[in-house]
Image (cartoon, rainbow, N blue to C red; front, side, top):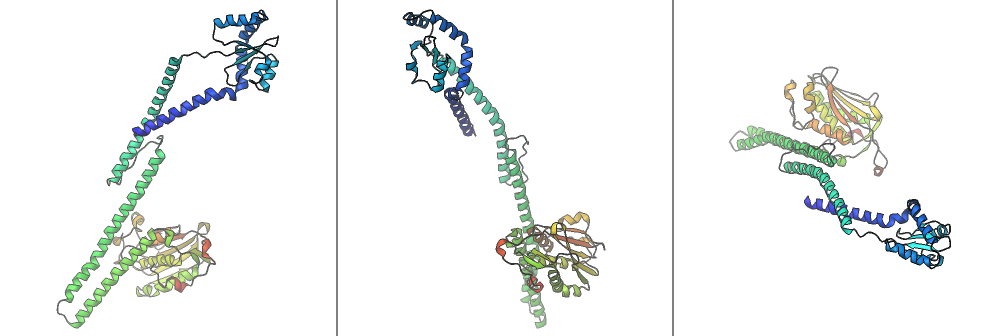
Length: 451
């Protein structure tokens, strides 16, 4: 940091020195007319006295009179003719000289005073040689600049050290560390970005920890059953009992396969819209195909599933596989809790959005628990009457499907007191490279709902 301070100070000194040099050498030329007018006013009395003095010493006496003046000052007087000054002055200056006005050279160091008889008095005053005073003046300027830079850098440095300490603490594993800087700080925006980044990283790491904990917990049960079943296969039993053991082992293997598939699906959806394939989909055919796919499961649970598309848009741009997967998860979730009926509806939302609603008449979910229902591996079994099953990933997948479409999903209470899931999919247009849109066949949408 000290090196940065030194560099900043040197840059300020260099910039200040260049500015002083520019002002000293070029401002006289840039504002020559104004400076000349000011000089004429400031030395008006002096020029009158000088002109009167020289006019009272005509001819050869004038040179002696100038020499006498020179002995009492360092004006550098000399007598010139108009032909002598023509190469030294421009057209405007020569015009002023012919008009009897005092003329100042472009560098501001020479004066030309015309006399009535055509003689021109040239003066080149010597600048005072007070180098020690000038050096002291520039030293005071340099010291004032240094103090200003130090004062500014002090607050800047202090805030940077706070940000550095926060970064070090965060790097050591203290994920809750933030950089508490004032809004008046020079690096407030940087600290704000750091805090936002730290919050996102903390949330991501905590999410990964929860995921790993949930995965470990979910894998233990089927693995333990597999290990136990394999041990039982080694014991002598009847062929029928052996076949039952083998069927149980196959069920455990399928359960593991389903868990891995769910995890892969959720992992792909966590990556965002990269795995999204948009196309124009018939809304009614999409819902009918989902209902047809769930017909047997609904019937096995002695439930009824109704589908309503009144008021819904005819078609919508979305990824039909992902949306069908989300609806299947919602309906499967409802089959575990519904008492008699489940409804699947579609309607038109704000700004052309498609709203998909799944209702059940089960016991519902308390308001305090609704915020966490979409988290991976989170179950609220105690809030319902029946054994739920599953891995706790279905609703997490529903949320990610909604997010990759730029929408959302929320949970409300249905008219019958059960759960109502509303998934909103904003209106979108097909990608430019997508070509002509095709109305997707509903049977193809859910033929393989696992993505």
